Image (tube, each protein chain N blue to C red):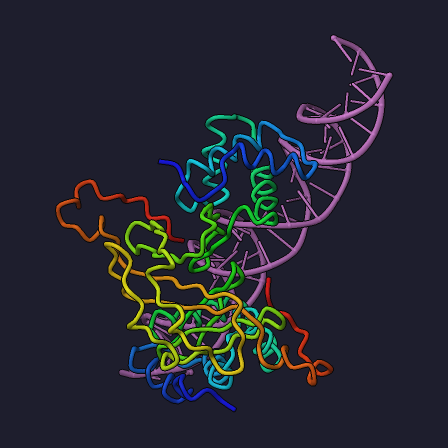
Length: 156
Length: 156
DNA sequence: TGTTTGTTCGCATGATTTGCAGATTAGGTC
DNA sequence: GACCTAATCTGCAAATCATGCGAACAAACA
């Protein structure tokens, strides 16, 4: 179940190559992890995943690559409630729903939002609008699934 | 130009007293600073203001008092783009507009938002919704006021 | 004035992120 | 395949933001 919104590792490799950047094993690994990851991982979470497959990879390199991708517009960044920055491989215009129980962050398609109905505040020209819902996700709300409810609350 | 939305220092003193908490000079000072401050100060900004009036006050005390007020529901917390937590004396239901130029954070009344038109994401029960506009405020957008445009960009 | 208990303060610590410099390596050249 | 060079990776120091902890202190009350 990989993310259809982020570019494939092959595409990112091509992008890097076209920019004169080198294709290192570390970068290739991170490209893959981001493509497989439809969640909103922190740099540290990606570092943990990467370390399992490439022992010795540096957290610094993870940060560096994520920053590079962000500056290239291939990755988004979001933060909730003062926690660590989360990287968002979904480049489509969308918003987020954060579960108070398990910390899961779900994407909310812009289609679901009647954004045009949001009038502008006085004397302000918004270039972007972000909406964050806080609440309880279906899995945590469902009594029948309480037994296998995810408990890894990722909130700060 | 004090904030009409936050409780007055007198009210907060009463609230603390009723909870069996002590009324210290540090707390009284912070109550006043919050009441006068319609902006969205960080703990450090309040510490700086407080230090000018009460040299020797501890940053730790500022954090402690702000946390207390937050837990008592007398203060809100907001964070933008991974920066430091900002404390919001405005307890009314509202949203925020962040200026990309000067970092000013303006409140956006809930009246301006057609919130009911925001449909719920699949299988999610939102208990709260926060909307953040990013853009350029009137002061920074106005060419005539470029000369005295605030330059204290508070973004991270 | 004295006692009690909550507060304040300073410091250590933790979490996240970035700066820096030396070691390493990808990618092109011969 | 060997070599060069610049980009990259890595480890560590350091900056920022926030909290834990314990000793010193002071508000509230008898």
